[in-house]
Each structure stands twice: as structure tokens, then as C-alpha cells.
Image (cartoon, rainbow, N blue to C red; front, side, top):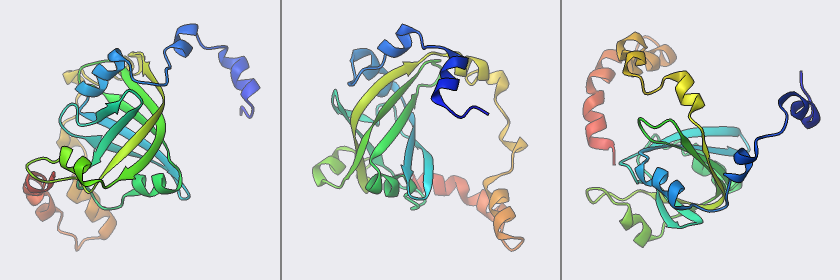
Length: 201
């Protein structure tokens, strides 16, 4: 087992100069394009109970740049666990990974988050008149793109590699496994589409 930074560096060597220089403390025009076209971002946080990584998704450009060093993410209706937001309250450090469908490169943003309930800001993120409960403001520390090797290896965008939903347990099945035989998995799955239609925002 490796137990020191020195051992790691001896094994891997030094990063290529390009890998270091592509990290900048602001969003340039190229990096802005990724954020504006991304409908999906992973949000990583850390708190007293440990780490959390949560998906955030909406129409492309739902994450908005306030300026080149600040971005804003609406917090849409979810399960009310608010794990990420709880973490941000006690530890503001966050990591973001932006994904654009069909594109191999991804964009990584590290920074410090704060939670806003400013009414004018909430209004800016309203959809069909429904405002988010809060907006996560991220003060940017570092931005850089990842090359496409991970997505190329995974063949993530190859339709031939897509998994049929029926091959995995349904949401109802997973609930039933946890809550027991009394849980009506069929009813849960049957009503899921309608719940999704009426509760996205």
C-alpha cells in the first residue's frame, strides 16, 4: 500500500506541463461554453458526516455565470435530504464536474459555496413560475478540463452500450428491498411517470 505523497509521485512521475497550465482561477470563453451547454453537473461536498456527491440537472445552461469567478446553481425540488447544502453550511469547499452529452471532455470546477435565498436571484431561476428554494453560489478557485479518455474508455455515449432499464431493479423494487414486502413496488413504479411530470420544479 502507498502511504506517502513521495511514493505516489515516484510511481506516477510528474504531470505534463499542459495538465498543470490548463488550470486557471476563472472561467474563460472556452470553459464558459462547456458550462452553458451542460445539462448535467455532479456536485461534491464534504461535511461532518463524510463526503457526498449529488447529481444536478436541468436545461442546458441552468448553471449560470454571475461573472468569470462566480457561478450559481438552482436547487430544484428533491428528496429534502439536503446533504450537499448541509455540508456547505459547515464546509464551503465544493467540486463540480460538468458533462455535455456526446462530448468526451468534461469540465471541473473547484471553489467555495454559499447558499442564497435572495428573492431576485430565485426569480431569475424560476421555471413556469416555480422558484427554487435556494441557489448555491460558488466562488471559483480553479477551473480545468479533463481530456476524453475516461468517457472514451467507458463508451458512455455509444448507444450500443446503453443498458435497457428493465435489466436493473426498478425504483419500486429497490424501495421494496429496503422497506419490506408490504411496500407496493408495482404501484410506486406505475405512478412514477406522473410524479416526475408534476414534481420536477
